[in-house]
Each structure stands twice: as structure tokens, then as C-alpha cells.
Image 1 (tube, rainbow, N blue to C red):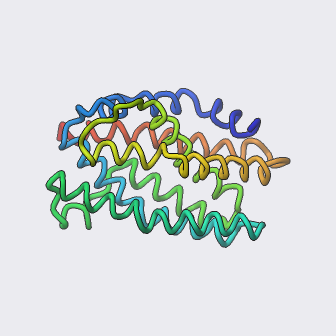
Image 2: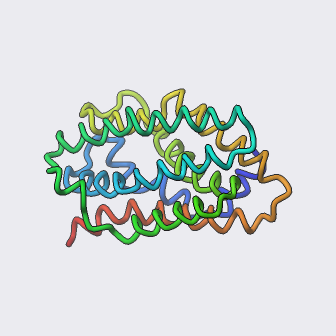
Length: 215
């Protein structure tokens, strides 16, 4: 994973700031404020449509039939179990449908949607993979910090498990392996620029939950 680790190193200090963020600490410890977590999930749900399109773009752009099947299977997970998680969590947190269906987008939310849309429009498999790798690997890194017992509330421990179970680990390993394969020989800057941009947005996205709480 030489290329992927070089990219992660290039994205410092944003990567470590995200995975060791106050938000992550409080979630893992089960003491995150409901309003903060609700704001975070509402904004995260705003990513879903663009993320589904990004994964669909990976299916189209992949240069290998087996890889296309892996992307397609993961797309079904996002559209199924993960989508169900959001609806259950909104109900548990008392978030009304009008609040999660059409919220005002926070700055980092809009920025990440723009980044995903640009990656889709590029039809460049390596660039698409860069954005997917940051989105998924960074979440695996922070979720892997959690140790048993996980926090008791389902909306907390399920969000951690989604991003740390064995299937998700295999998915992240696949993405990184694909990026290593297709990114070999590419100019480093063309991959590091969107990688760093994505990591910076992820850090700001966690900040956003608390910024909004002070509004």
C-alpha cells in the first residue's frame, strides 16, 4: 500500500485531526450530545445521493469486470442497510422528516458533494477511487479506535459497527488495492490534490456539528 500511505501522509494533519476528533471521542464513549449527533447525521445523509452516484461512476469507470461486481455489491449495501440505519437513527433522535429531507447544507457538506460530483464527471477511475478511499478509509480508521464494550445506544454503536466490521474492512482493502493498481504510474499530484482536499473536508465536517450547535 505504498501509494495509499504516501497519500495519507500528504493529507496530514487533517487525517489525524479527523480520526482523533472530539466528535469521534464522544461518539465512541457514548456521551455525544443528541443535537450534535443529529446535526451530523442530517448533513451526512445529504451525501447519500451523490455518494450513490459516485459508486455508480466507479462501476462504469472500472477497467476490470471483477472490480465492477465488488463496487456493485457495496452499492447495494449503501442503498440498503446503511440507508435503513439513517431512518432508524433519525427516529431515535427525534429528527422530523422535513428536517432530514431538505435541510440547509452546511459548508463542508456542499464542498464534499461538489468534490464527489467532480469525480463523477471526470469519469477517471483513479480520481473516483481517491475520493472513495478517503471517505471509507478515514471512517475505518476512526471506527477502529473503538473497543468493546461499544456504547449501548443503537444509533451510536451501529454507526461504529457499520464502519468497522469485517465486511467493511474488506471493502476498504479492496478500494486501496484498486487505487494502488490503477494509480501506479500516475502523477502523484493529480491524486494527492483531491485526496488532501477530501481529508480537509472530513475534518471540517466533524467541526461543523459543533459549529451548528452554537448557532
